[in-house]
Image 1 (cartoon, helix red, strand yellow):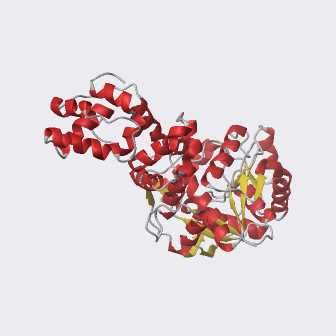
Image 2 (tube, rainbow, N blue to C red; image 1 turned 60 degrees about the vertical axis):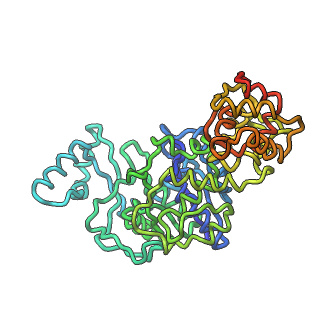
Image 3 (cartoon, rainbow, N blue to C red; image 1 turned 45 degrees about the vertical axis):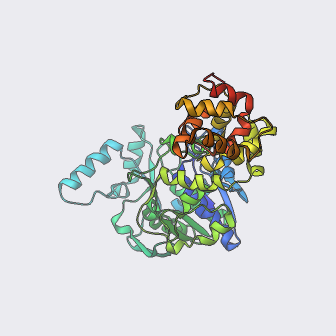
Length: 446
């Protein structure tokens, strides 16, 4: 069975750039009848928090992603240690004692000589006595993986034939001097132990794949199928990061965006499909062919998100938003009428609260065209107001004054709502009610 994973670090809130790999993995699992694993890569004890861990699960659930399986890297240290011991025994993991300052000086010398700034494996030339002397000075080793100087090739789900020349890379540090692991080894060990069949991630990991394939092989583990998709950027081409709070999934949710709009744009941007709102996850999964994803960066434009969101909102039935309208303080006996009257003018559901304020006041009317407003006040029909009241009333005002078009409707809109634009007043008038309408037409705050 296909098993994919999304492996964020709980060191901040997920942003729209994280949504892309999360969704591509979840949709790939749906399309292939597989399973989706959420693995929290929480080995950074100083920065990982339970608040962020809980937020990740909440944000994924908001997107419609419910993991089939769950794991934490921090609970698997014994497996990581055992793998490190195996690599040491095989001569593929070796201790290095250089400080960061020494390594930086060495890189500068290499660059000055026109040499590639890769690690020269000086630590491999140290004898036992030299290592003992360095440790006696108080130095503790960091541990590097000994790369084989060969090209690693694979058939990428997105990019097709791909390769990395490992001879051009430094032996990567897998374990810090304080004994903590960097990302690379725990990720390989967990992917192997948990049975991950496909690793779908951003193209910024392509070089990592060359290294990780060698680690899989050194551990005698099956190598998963890899796919490296293009990355989402801002509309200006800037890379996305956790510091862009306005593009965090939490921020988008709090701003009133629909999850279907967010996931549609996060997935379809930079693909062969036209960007459109796809409400259903299964339908979205059917549209995504990893082999058709563009190699160019995928620009995420918030203005495009607004358009997608508005189209979804305009089509929403009242039953789908009733609880959200109640949470906005809109009474149940008026909520459906309000929703049907205003939804075509909304970009986001929470904006309905502003139109509830407009209909119920208090509101400062704007009085123009006194003759039109006087005729409107004199001909205001009795309640109850219904769907035909507006048409009959404005026909009467037109007959009395000769006003028509903008000269008729704009003065009424300004008096009744205080605004130049908005929903059709035929739907708003019954919500405003006769008493409030009369007072607004008289220029009173109501």
